[in-house]
Amino acid sequence: MMWQKSVASPMISLVLPTFNESASIEAALRRSAAALEGTAEPFELIVVDDSSPDGTADLAERLSQELPVRVLRRSGRNGLASAVVAGWSIARGNILAVIDADLQHPPEVLSKLLSAIRDSGADIAVASRAADGGGSRNWSPIRKFTSWTATHLAASVLPLTLADVHDAMSGMFMLKKEVVTGVVLEPRGYKILLEVLAKGRYRELIEVPYVFGPRDRGNSKLGARQTLEYFAHLAQLAVITGQFKTWLCYAAVGLSGASIHLISLLFLATNQHWPLALALPVAIQAALLSNFLWNRYLTFRRLPYVGSVAAAGGKLGLARYEAVCIPGALLNAGLTVTLTHFNVALLISASAGVVLGGFWNVFFNVPAIWRSSISQSAFAGVPSQTATSMNTAS
Image 1 (spheres, helix red, strand yellow):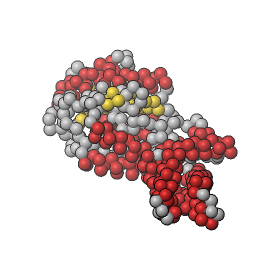
Image 2 (cartoon, rainbow, N blue to C red; image 1 turned 90 degrees about the horizontal axis):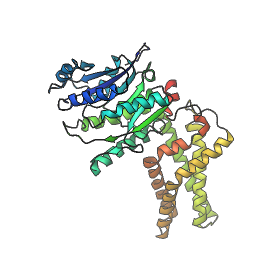
Image 3 (cartoon, helix red, strand yellow; image 1 turned 30 degrees about the vertical axis):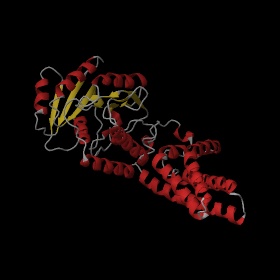
Image 4 (tube, rainbow, N blue to C red; image 1 turned 180 degrees about the vertical axis):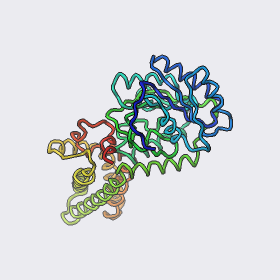
Protein backbone atom coordinates (compact mmCIF):
# COMPACT_ATOMS: atom_id res chain seq x y z
CA MET A 1 0.00 0.00 0.00
CA MET A 2 1.41 3.38 -1.05
CA TRP A 3 0.97 6.07 1.59
CA GLN A 4 -0.14 9.35 0.03
CA LYS A 5 0.44 12.75 1.51
CA SER A 6 -2.64 14.01 3.30
CA VAL A 7 -3.58 16.57 5.91
CA ALA A 8 -3.95 14.67 9.18
CA SER A 9 -5.57 16.06 12.30
CA PRO A 10 -3.54 16.48 15.49
CA MET A 11 -4.75 13.15 16.83
CA ILE A 12 -3.44 9.76 17.93
CA SER A 13 -4.72 6.84 15.87
CA LEU A 14 -4.15 3.57 17.73
CA VAL A 15 -4.67 0.31 15.81
CA LEU A 16 -5.46 -2.94 17.58
CA PRO A 17 -5.25 -5.92 15.19
CA THR A 18 -7.44 -8.78 16.41
CA PHE A 19 -8.29 -12.40 15.80
CA ASN A 20 -10.26 -14.22 18.49
CA GLU A 21 -9.56 -11.64 21.19
CA SER A 22 -13.06 -11.53 22.73
CA ALA A 23 -11.64 -12.41 26.15
CA SER A 24 -9.40 -9.34 26.27
CA ILE A 25 -10.66 -6.78 23.74
CA GLU A 26 -12.86 -4.83 26.17
CA ALA A 27 -10.12 -4.48 28.77
CA ALA A 28 -7.60 -3.60 26.06
CA LEU A 29 -9.82 -0.83 24.67
CA ARG A 30 -10.76 0.60 28.05
CA ARG A 31 -7.17 0.63 29.34
CA SER A 32 -5.87 2.10 26.07
CA ALA A 33 -8.52 4.82 26.19
CA ALA A 34 -7.69 5.62 29.81
CA ALA A 35 -3.98 5.88 29.01
CA LEU A 36 -4.56 8.17 26.03
CA GLU A 37 -7.13 10.30 27.84
CA GLY A 38 -4.39 11.08 30.35
CA THR A 39 -2.36 12.73 27.57
CA ALA A 40 -5.10 15.35 27.02
CA GLU A 41 -4.78 14.80 23.25
CA PRO A 42 -7.58 13.61 20.97
CA PHE A 43 -7.38 9.97 19.96
CA GLU A 44 -9.20 7.18 18.15
CA LEU A 45 -9.07 3.41 18.62
CA ILE A 46 -9.21 1.36 15.41
CA VAL A 47 -9.92 -2.36 15.77
CA VAL A 48 -9.00 -4.32 12.64
CA ASP A 49 -10.56 -7.76 12.91
CA ASP A 50 -9.86 -10.70 10.61
CA SER A 51 -13.28 -12.39 10.79
CA SER A 52 -12.92 -13.59 14.37
CA PRO A 53 -15.49 -16.35 14.96
CA ASP A 54 -15.65 -15.50 18.68
CA GLY A 55 -17.39 -12.14 18.13
CA THR A 56 -14.43 -9.86 18.83
CA ALA A 57 -15.59 -7.27 16.28
CA ASP A 58 -19.13 -7.21 17.68
CA LEU A 59 -17.84 -6.56 21.19
CA ALA A 60 -15.65 -3.71 19.93
CA GLU A 61 -18.54 -2.13 18.03
CA ARG A 62 -20.74 -2.17 21.13
CA LEU A 63 -18.04 -0.26 23.00
CA SER A 64 -18.12 2.46 20.32
CA GLN A 65 -21.16 3.84 22.14
CA GLU A 66 -18.93 5.06 24.98
CA LEU A 67 -15.39 5.03 23.54
CA PRO A 68 -13.95 6.51 20.30
CA VAL A 69 -13.76 3.09 18.67
CA ARG A 70 -13.97 2.25 14.98
CA VAL A 71 -14.03 -1.30 13.68
CA LEU A 72 -12.66 -2.46 10.34
CA ARG A 73 -13.77 -5.98 9.45
CA ARG A 74 -11.67 -7.97 6.99
CA SER A 75 -12.68 -11.24 5.39
CA GLY A 76 -10.32 -14.12 6.03
CA ARG A 77 -7.22 -14.23 8.17
CA ASN A 78 -4.70 -11.95 6.47
CA GLY A 79 -2.10 -11.45 9.17
CA LEU A 80 -1.32 -9.01 11.95
CA ALA A 81 1.07 -6.76 10.04
CA SER A 82 -1.27 -6.20 7.10
CA ALA A 83 -4.08 -5.50 9.59
CA VAL A 84 -2.01 -2.68 11.07
CA VAL A 85 -1.40 -1.19 7.62
CA ALA A 86 -5.12 -1.43 6.85
CA GLY A 87 -5.94 0.35 10.11
CA TRP A 88 -3.41 3.10 9.49
CA SER A 89 -4.83 3.63 6.00
CA ILE A 90 -8.13 4.85 7.48
CA ALA A 91 -6.54 6.68 10.41
CA ARG A 92 -7.41 10.35 10.90
CA GLY A 93 -4.53 11.24 13.18
CA ASN A 94 -1.03 12.55 12.59
CA ILE A 95 0.39 10.10 15.14
CA LEU A 96 0.01 6.42 14.27
CA ALA A 97 0.33 3.67 16.86
CA VAL A 98 -0.21 -0.05 17.30
CA ILE A 99 -0.68 -2.37 20.25
CA ASP A 100 -1.68 -6.03 20.53
CA ALA A 101 -5.10 -6.65 22.04
CA ASP A 102 -4.03 -9.55 24.28
CA LEU A 103 -2.84 -7.24 27.10
CA GLN A 104 0.69 -8.62 27.11
CA HIS A 105 1.62 -5.08 26.10
CA PRO A 106 0.44 -2.87 28.99
CA PRO A 107 -1.61 -0.03 27.44
CA GLU A 108 -0.41 2.35 30.13
CA VAL A 109 2.92 2.57 28.27
CA LEU A 110 1.14 4.41 25.41
CA SER A 111 1.32 7.71 27.25
CA LYS A 112 5.08 7.26 27.71
CA LEU A 113 5.49 6.61 24.00
CA LEU A 114 3.63 9.79 23.15
CA SER A 115 5.71 11.77 25.65
CA ALA A 116 8.87 10.39 24.04
CA ILE A 117 7.77 11.72 20.66
CA ARG A 118 6.49 15.05 21.93
CA ASP A 119 9.34 15.78 24.33
CA SER A 120 12.34 14.42 22.44
CA GLY A 121 11.23 15.18 18.90
CA ALA A 122 11.74 11.55 17.91
CA ASP A 123 9.92 10.31 14.82
CA ILE A 124 9.39 6.79 16.18
CA ALA A 125 8.98 5.62 19.78
CA VAL A 126 9.26 1.86 20.39
CA ALA A 127 8.16 0.07 23.53
CA SER A 128 11.23 -2.05 24.26
CA ARG A 129 11.69 -5.12 26.41
CA ALA A 130 15.46 -4.88 25.88
CA ALA A 131 15.96 -1.27 27.00
CA ASP A 132 17.16 -0.57 30.54
CA GLY A 133 14.21 -1.17 32.83
CA GLY A 134 12.38 -3.44 30.39
CA GLY A 135 11.95 -7.19 30.37
CA SER A 136 9.62 -10.15 30.03
CA ARG A 137 7.65 -11.66 32.87
CA ASN A 138 7.47 -15.41 33.53
CA TRP A 139 9.13 -16.51 30.30
CA SER A 140 10.46 -20.05 30.08
CA PRO A 141 14.06 -20.61 28.94
CA ILE A 142 12.74 -21.89 25.61
CA ARG A 143 10.64 -18.77 25.07
CA LYS A 144 13.61 -16.55 25.92
CA PHE A 145 15.86 -18.45 23.53
CA THR A 146 13.27 -18.28 20.74
CA SER A 147 12.89 -14.52 21.19
CA TRP A 148 16.65 -13.99 21.27
CA THR A 149 17.07 -16.08 18.13
CA ALA A 150 14.43 -14.12 16.21
CA THR A 151 15.89 -10.78 17.31
CA HIS A 152 19.47 -11.77 16.53
CA LEU A 153 18.49 -13.22 13.16
CA ALA A 154 16.83 -9.95 12.16
CA ALA A 155 19.87 -7.94 13.30
CA SER A 156 22.17 -10.24 11.30
CA VAL A 157 20.10 -10.19 8.09
CA LEU A 158 19.45 -6.43 8.34
CA PRO A 159 22.47 -5.21 10.34
CA LEU A 160 22.50 -1.70 8.92
CA THR A 161 18.78 -1.22 9.54
CA LEU A 162 18.74 -2.61 13.07
CA ALA A 163 22.23 -1.78 14.33
CA ASP A 164 20.95 0.40 17.17
CA VAL A 165 17.47 -1.06 17.74
CA HIS A 166 17.32 -3.31 20.79
CA ASP A 167 13.78 -4.65 20.33
CA ALA A 168 12.89 -4.78 16.64
CA MET A 169 10.31 -7.48 17.46
CA SER A 170 8.18 -5.08 19.49
CA GLY A 171 4.47 -5.02 18.74
CA MET A 172 3.81 -1.68 20.45
CA PHE A 173 5.11 1.59 19.04
CA MET A 174 4.16 5.07 17.81
CA LEU A 175 5.34 7.11 14.85
CA LYS A 176 4.68 10.38 13.12
CA LYS A 177 2.53 9.81 10.06
CA GLU A 178 5.10 11.40 7.74
CA VAL A 179 7.45 8.49 8.50
CA VAL A 180 5.39 6.29 6.18
CA THR A 181 3.95 8.95 3.87
CA GLY A 182 4.84 8.06 0.29
CA VAL A 183 6.19 4.66 1.38
CA VAL A 184 4.92 1.34 0.05
CA LEU A 185 4.25 -0.93 3.02
CA GLU A 186 3.92 -4.60 2.09
CA PRO A 187 4.48 -6.49 5.33
CA ARG A 188 4.34 -10.26 5.61
CA GLY A 189 3.48 -12.09 8.79
CA TYR A 190 3.28 -10.30 12.11
CA LYS A 191 6.32 -8.01 12.51
CA ILE A 192 5.13 -4.64 11.21
CA LEU A 193 7.91 -2.74 13.01
CA LEU A 194 10.54 -4.38 10.78
CA GLU A 195 8.73 -3.05 7.71
CA VAL A 196 8.58 0.47 9.14
CA LEU A 197 12.23 0.50 10.19
CA ALA A 198 13.44 -0.82 6.84
CA LYS A 199 11.32 1.45 4.64
CA GLY A 200 10.25 4.42 6.74
CA ARG A 201 11.76 7.90 6.52
CA TYR A 202 12.81 9.02 9.96
CA ARG A 203 15.60 10.91 11.64
CA GLU A 204 15.45 9.74 15.22
CA LEU A 205 14.13 6.72 17.08
CA ILE A 206 13.77 6.33 20.83
CA GLU A 207 13.05 3.20 22.85
CA VAL A 208 10.86 3.25 25.96
CA PRO A 209 11.33 0.36 28.43
CA TYR A 210 8.38 -1.81 29.43
CA VAL A 211 7.79 -5.26 30.91
CA PHE A 212 6.10 -7.74 28.58
CA GLY A 213 3.34 -9.44 30.57
CA PRO A 214 2.17 -13.04 30.62
CA ARG A 215 -0.80 -14.14 28.49
CA ASP A 216 -3.76 -14.45 30.87
CA ARG A 217 -6.47 -14.86 28.24
CA GLY A 218 -6.73 -16.37 24.78
CA ASN A 219 -4.07 -18.32 22.89
CA SER A 220 -0.87 -17.38 21.09
CA LYS A 221 -1.22 -16.96 17.31
CA LEU A 222 2.43 -17.83 16.65
CA GLY A 223 2.93 -21.05 14.70
CA ALA A 224 4.82 -22.63 11.83
CA ARG A 225 3.10 -20.43 9.25
CA GLN A 226 4.02 -17.23 11.08
CA THR A 227 7.61 -18.41 11.45
CA LEU A 228 7.96 -19.05 7.71
CA GLU A 229 6.38 -15.67 6.96
CA TYR A 230 8.93 -14.07 9.26
CA PHE A 231 11.84 -15.65 7.36
CA ALA A 232 10.32 -14.58 4.04
CA HIS A 233 9.79 -11.04 5.31
CA LEU A 234 13.42 -10.73 6.39
CA ALA A 235 14.61 -11.94 3.00
CA GLN A 236 12.28 -9.52 1.23
CA LEU A 237 13.54 -6.57 3.27
CA ALA A 238 17.17 -7.55 2.71
CA VAL A 239 16.61 -7.35 -1.05
CA ILE A 240 14.57 -4.12 -0.91
CA THR A 241 17.09 -2.27 1.27
CA GLY A 242 20.08 -3.41 -0.78
CA GLN A 243 21.61 -5.33 2.11
CA PHE A 244 21.38 -8.65 0.23
CA LYS A 245 23.81 -7.40 -2.43
CA THR A 246 25.99 -6.03 0.33
CA TRP A 247 25.92 -9.46 1.97
CA LEU A 248 27.16 -11.09 -1.25
CA CYS A 249 30.04 -8.64 -1.50
CA TYR A 250 30.80 -9.08 2.20
CA ALA A 251 30.97 -12.86 1.73
CA ALA A 252 33.35 -12.50 -1.23
CA VAL A 253 35.61 -10.23 0.84
CA GLY A 254 35.51 -12.75 3.69
CA LEU A 255 36.68 -15.53 1.37
CA SER A 256 39.52 -13.35 0.09
CA GLY A 257 40.55 -12.58 3.67
CA ALA A 258 40.56 -16.27 4.53
CA SER A 259 42.83 -16.93 1.56
CA ILE A 260 45.21 -14.15 2.63
CA HIS A 261 45.30 -15.58 6.15
CA LEU A 262 46.14 -19.10 4.99
CA ILE A 263 48.71 -18.02 2.40
CA SER A 264 50.45 -15.66 4.84
CA LEU A 265 50.52 -18.23 7.61
CA LEU A 266 51.89 -21.02 5.44
CA PHE A 267 54.50 -18.75 3.88
CA LEU A 268 55.74 -17.38 7.20
CA ALA A 269 55.63 -20.68 9.11
CA THR A 270 56.96 -23.05 6.44
CA ASN A 271 59.02 -20.92 4.05
CA GLN A 272 60.37 -18.37 6.51
CA HIS A 273 60.34 -20.77 9.50
CA TRP A 274 58.69 -18.27 11.80
CA PRO A 275 57.38 -19.75 15.06
CA LEU A 276 53.60 -20.26 15.00
CA ALA A 277 53.19 -17.86 17.94
CA LEU A 278 54.53 -15.07 15.71
CA ALA A 279 53.28 -16.13 12.28
CA LEU A 280 49.67 -16.62 13.41
CA PRO A 281 48.96 -13.09 14.73
CA VAL A 282 50.68 -11.58 11.67
CA ALA A 283 48.51 -13.67 9.32
CA ILE A 284 45.37 -12.79 11.26
CA GLN A 285 46.26 -9.11 11.19
CA ALA A 286 46.88 -9.22 7.43
CA ALA A 287 43.47 -10.80 6.85
CA LEU A 288 41.70 -8.31 9.14
CA LEU A 289 43.34 -5.35 7.44
CA SER A 290 42.44 -6.67 3.99
CA ASN A 291 38.83 -7.34 5.01
CA PHE A 292 38.47 -3.92 6.57
CA LEU A 293 39.79 -2.06 3.53
CA TRP A 294 37.82 -4.05 0.97
CA ASN A 295 34.61 -3.84 2.98
CA ARG A 296 34.94 -0.16 3.70
CA TYR A 297 35.97 0.98 0.24
CA LEU A 298 33.99 -1.55 -1.80
CA THR A 299 31.30 -3.44 0.13
CA PHE A 300 29.89 -0.44 1.99
CA ARG A 301 31.01 2.31 -0.37
CA ARG A 302 28.04 1.59 -2.64
CA LEU A 303 25.58 2.39 0.14
CA PRO A 304 24.27 5.93 -0.46
CA TYR A 305 24.78 7.22 3.08
CA VAL A 306 28.45 6.26 3.47
CA GLY A 307 30.01 8.85 1.17
CA SER A 308 33.73 9.61 1.18
CA VAL A 309 36.10 8.30 3.79
CA ALA A 310 38.57 10.59 5.55
CA ALA A 311 41.98 9.35 6.65
CA ALA A 312 41.30 10.08 10.31
CA GLY A 313 37.95 8.32 10.09
CA GLY A 314 39.76 5.35 8.56
CA LYS A 315 42.03 5.00 11.58
CA LEU A 316 39.10 5.20 13.99
CA GLY A 317 37.11 2.76 11.89
CA LEU A 318 39.95 0.22 11.81
CA ALA A 319 40.32 0.40 15.59
CA ARG A 320 36.60 -0.25 16.08
CA TYR A 321 36.64 -3.03 13.49
CA GLU A 322 39.55 -4.86 15.09
CA ALA A 323 38.03 -4.47 18.55
CA VAL A 324 34.79 -6.20 17.58
CA CYS A 325 36.70 -8.90 15.65
CA ILE A 326 38.84 -9.92 18.64
CA PRO A 327 36.59 -12.84 19.77
CA GLY A 328 36.60 -14.41 16.31
CA ALA A 329 40.35 -13.90 16.00
CA LEU A 330 40.98 -15.55 19.37
CA LEU A 331 38.82 -18.53 18.45
CA ASN A 332 40.70 -18.82 15.16
CA ALA A 333 44.10 -18.73 16.83
CA GLY A 334 43.07 -20.99 19.71
CA LEU A 335 41.78 -23.77 17.49
CA THR A 336 44.76 -23.53 15.14
CA VAL A 337 47.26 -23.83 17.99
CA THR A 338 45.32 -26.66 19.64
CA LEU A 339 45.12 -28.76 16.49
CA THR A 340 48.79 -28.27 15.60
CA HIS A 341 49.66 -29.30 19.15
CA PHE A 342 48.05 -32.65 18.34
CA ASN A 343 50.13 -32.90 15.15
CA VAL A 344 47.33 -31.97 12.75
CA ALA A 345 48.74 -30.53 9.51
CA LEU A 346 49.11 -26.75 9.61
CA LEU A 347 46.90 -26.18 6.56
CA ILE A 348 44.07 -28.22 8.06
CA SER A 349 44.51 -26.63 11.50
CA ALA A 350 44.53 -23.10 10.08
CA SER A 351 41.53 -23.82 7.84
CA ALA A 352 39.55 -25.11 10.82
CA GLY A 353 40.49 -21.97 12.76
CA VAL A 354 39.34 -19.73 9.92
CA VAL A 355 36.03 -21.59 9.72
CA LEU A 356 35.42 -21.32 13.48
CA GLY A 357 36.31 -17.63 13.61
CA GLY A 358 34.19 -16.92 10.54
CA PHE A 359 31.26 -18.87 11.99
CA TRP A 360 31.41 -16.77 15.15
CA ASN A 361 31.52 -13.50 13.26
CA VAL A 362 28.67 -14.40 10.90
CA PHE A 363 26.29 -15.78 13.49
CA PHE A 364 27.08 -13.65 16.51
CA ASN A 365 28.91 -10.51 15.46
CA VAL A 366 27.76 -9.30 12.03
CA PRO A 367 25.84 -6.17 13.16
CA ALA A 368 28.83 -4.89 15.16
CA ILE A 369 31.30 -5.70 12.38
CA TRP A 370 29.25 -4.00 9.67
CA ARG A 371 28.73 -0.95 11.82
CA SER A 372 32.41 -0.68 12.73
CA SER A 373 33.50 -0.92 9.10
CA ILE A 374 31.82 2.37 8.23
CA SER A 375 33.30 5.63 9.43
CA GLN A 376 31.53 7.46 12.24
CA SER A 377 31.61 10.62 10.11
CA ALA A 378 29.48 8.85 7.53
CA PHE A 379 26.61 8.93 10.01
CA ALA A 380 26.87 12.60 10.89
CA GLY A 381 23.43 14.10 10.52
CA VAL A 382 21.99 10.64 9.85
CA PRO A 383 19.75 8.89 12.39
CA SER A 384 21.11 6.09 14.48
CA GLN A 385 18.95 3.82 12.34
CA THR A 386 21.07 3.69 9.21
CA ALA A 387 18.15 2.55 7.08
CA THR A 388 16.74 6.04 6.74
CA SER A 389 19.02 7.51 4.11
CA MET A 390 19.28 4.21 2.33
CA ASN A 391 15.54 3.82 2.14
CA THR A 392 14.90 7.24 0.74
CA ALA A 393 17.25 6.33 -2.05
CA SER A 394 15.78 2.90 -2.63
